[in-house]
Image 1 (cartoon, rainbow, N blue to C red):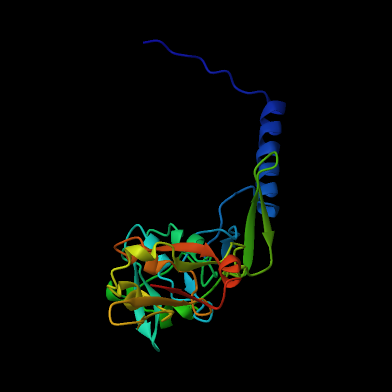
Image 2: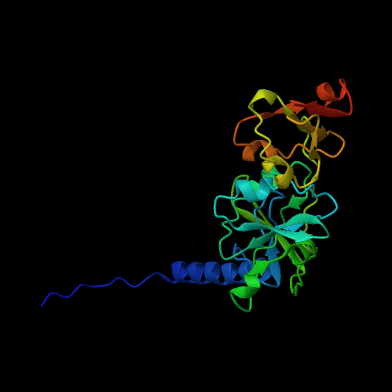
Length: 254
């Protein structure tokens, strides 16, 4: 058996270690060095582009179907309300990619910083337009907003304020387009464009006994391109609105 002799610490070193430990305890009691957020009483500050739950502004929606067409998870379905169509979201499928937000030409779909949500059942996770348009009912306990400072040493900045979780989104600056009959000789008068147009901007009229004329009302057309995507003969193409309106209020192609 080998015994290891442990040298007893000297008195002054022992006192110094105890003083250091007591000092550290006092510092932590007065100003804790923890970086833990005491949720839900404290909430971390999130960036404005945080991909949380979606909201719908029905006044801005132009029924263009872009959000439904671009959704990679097929989580958006269009609901008919008041002779128009508005998006609803199935959160059992939604992956919060916000492709719909990025593609919306009028900022009718906008993000929020709401992410901590509880649903009673799977059926309640399917939100029709009227529920998507209203702000969700929230119970908030947070009174402090916490922000991390990564400049140098990691620090926490706590403010006695409540962050607004609803984000205001400006309409993106994009050129306005309308649909026009670029190749009228391809038209077979199938009327798919008429039936698919959410704004009733496309009509057909009989010019003579053998000729049908496709007419587009550019004042109603929102440039959603639903007709272009559905046209089986590639008759329609997008045109800049300012260029088309120089030639008149409507486009007639036979």
